[in-house]
Image 1 (cartoon, rainbow over the protein chains, first blue to last red):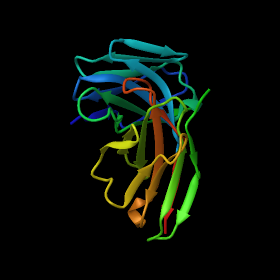
Image 2 (spheres, rainbow over the protein chains, first blue to last red):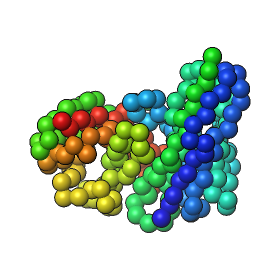
Image 3 (cartoon, chains in turn cyan, green):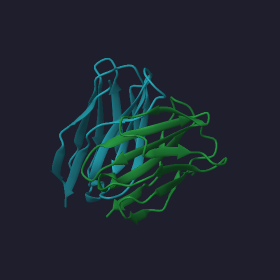
Length: 114
Length: 113
């Protein structure tokens, strides 16, 4: 059974700092990995999608990497801003098992202090 | 940009009542899902739907739950007799194929009183 873990559970940084969020998964047989952002009480906004054949994806100040063999992904946020404060979720779509449901991690709650 | 649409955004219901949560997936998508998130907890898989039938369901998805795609555009989740512990945010998702990006709706917050 696929398990997805995110460390740290919470992170507080001063504005302008670069930061890294970590995600690990137990089964490397995945189709892809997605990073989402969730604001309090709100929905899930997809940030980046990395296919299993890719090593990284970039969107603006965000860069996500994938090391499938070790079961790890990182989300790098450059020059953090207070508006980046949210919970960040990683999620994998496994190749094995059922109809490729997305399995979510536990999330990292980020606070960027002005 | 196409998006998954969910209605209502918030629903309050009395314990024991039936509720139907509605979703309009992206039009060319073939795989549909429901997830839920109890306040402060992980996003949990409920059910997946493909080719007009349930393809997988979790242990949460018991006989009180059902899904339907009544026409070519809507995808619904019905809870027959709501319990207090059904209070959660419910997310609908869709994707074109199993290895493409999953798009999520903004969720329906269900409050059972």
